[in-house]
Image: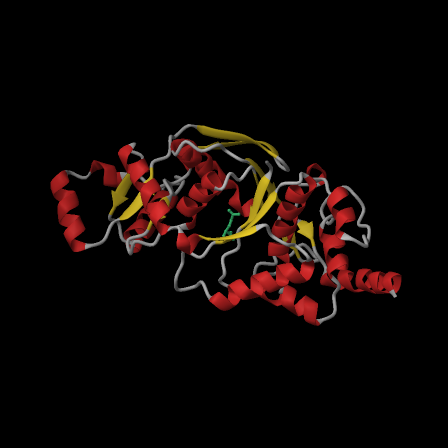
Amino acid sequence: MTTTRFAPSPTGYLHIGNLRTALFNFLIARQAGGEFILRIDDTDPERSKPEYVDGIKRDLEWLGLHWDRVEHQSARFERYAEVADQLRHKGLFYECFETPLELDLKRKKQLNMGKPPVYDRSALALSDAEREALSIERAGHWRFMLDQSRIEWTDGILGGISIDAASVSDPVLIRGDGQVLYTLASICDDTDMGVTHVVRGSDHVTNTATQIQMIRAIGGTVPSFSHHSLLTGPKGEGLSKRLGSLALRDMRDAGIQPMALLSYLARLGSSDPIELRGVMEEIISGFNLTKFGSAPTKFDEADLIPITAKYLKIIS
Ligand code: GLU
């Protein structure tokens, strides 16, 4: 069965960039008669807030992006510990003791020498006595040991991707304070929940490369991965700083209509024209992920006003 998930961290309200990811995953599941999971990525106890979980659900409900079930990562820590042990037994998980400052200095030194700032695995060279001494002094963090070969996949939007794992640092999966990081939680969940298709922003391409190796290491089936381009402002400027002001709840308050917003986002950045649809079924049947391009996609919130006006005229 086709299974997708939308996996927001409840550290803020949903914005237009999140909606693009949510919508694509929703449409793929619905088109295939599959399952759409809302996964709350709340492994960070300090930044995750219940009011944001409520806000995320409210926004998705407003838009009619109904999920089949909700999963909370914070309810699955035991499972993540089990998988961490599995990786330890396989010799693919190792403890490191560098402080953030030490890591930063190492990176700067590598960059000065014109080298890529990749973690040098010096923790693997520690003797037992050195490791013991360090572990009394400070809490260790845990890294996954990448197989330093090329990682390849056919991306649903970007096409053939090949990343040299030797150019990527072994990812930290558990922090010194014991906090399980998103990457470990995500590969466990995608595997356990039978996720077949993952669509997310192109800022996750390197994560995907490392996650493919980790999913294989725990015996999971690698889903089909697609990375959509990131949205920019109308002049091509980065939106990251402005995303907070492009919250869906503000658009709702401003009177933007769900069908107008969804019709627009289901086509923006694709080779198909933007067409106003009256009902969700038409958005679902007209969606085609392969028509999306890899170039950054310009988003102008002003475009939502005429399309909303058109929708209101049709339904009146
Ligand atoms: N919580 C992650 C994020 O919001 C999810 C990424 C993913 O889809 O795996 O970036």
